[in-house]
Image: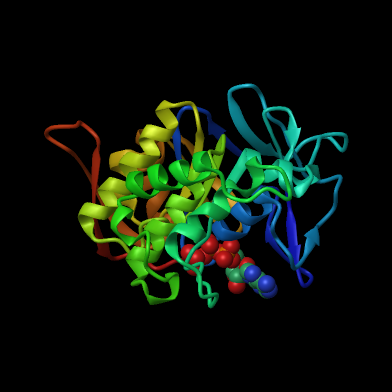
Length: 279
Ligand SMILES: Nc1ncnc2c1ncn2[C@@H]1O[C@H](COP(=O)(O)OP(=O)(O)OP(=O)(O)O)[C@@H](O)[C@H]1O
């Protein structure tokens, strides 16, 4: 799949596999194309166009989100047999939720109402909120660690509080695919671990989770699968232990990387030093 914004190719023949029942971390330096990829997958990319419909494709199996270059007949982006970008908006919203980076609103909206927006795809067009919708919204708020914020106005929240509310809105949507753009960047350490736990629980329930993350140690401790982007291309993908290695990370980030093993979990723990300049 390639994507072009204002004549500039931002994603160049990107191939992504996100197994279902797993948390996939989307990694890469600033500007490498993580947000663009998530927005294209979600079908909300406004500016730009596919560089060529024939040079990109995506395939889905019953067990994975798969977006890869392929023959012209392949759909552009697909999940579980559905062409994500071709789906009517409402149907797409029943299937996938996108949690964008720093999504903010100037609307005078209560937190509960903001989370109830996630229920809209699940009810008939003219119907108001049902008791079941409100119950789902409260459950989602509790799961996101934001139950006490229900009556607050969204515009008055701190960055971290707002991030929890966006997560709650996505949970209330009950998607089968959830795409998150740096879902932890405003969160304190306990809230980061809580958010990643929520994503792991979703994956355990069979939801396909794709999260753009800058914190490589958070990715190391919680992801099952990683995709590393650099300058709009996938430069590595696979299990955590295959991607989080110095030979892969050092040329991409231009820093020295040492990989240790966590004494309790056996997962990688990374340490960074300046020392490599990007060529
Ligand atoms: N609307 C746009 N017009 C022009 N260039 C754009 C537009 N949106 C994104 N880009 C460019 O596309 C590239 C990829 O941007 P993107 O936001 O996808 O990167 P990212 O990996 O999410 O970065 P970050 O880690 O900094 O959030 C960047 O060079 C960015 O400047």
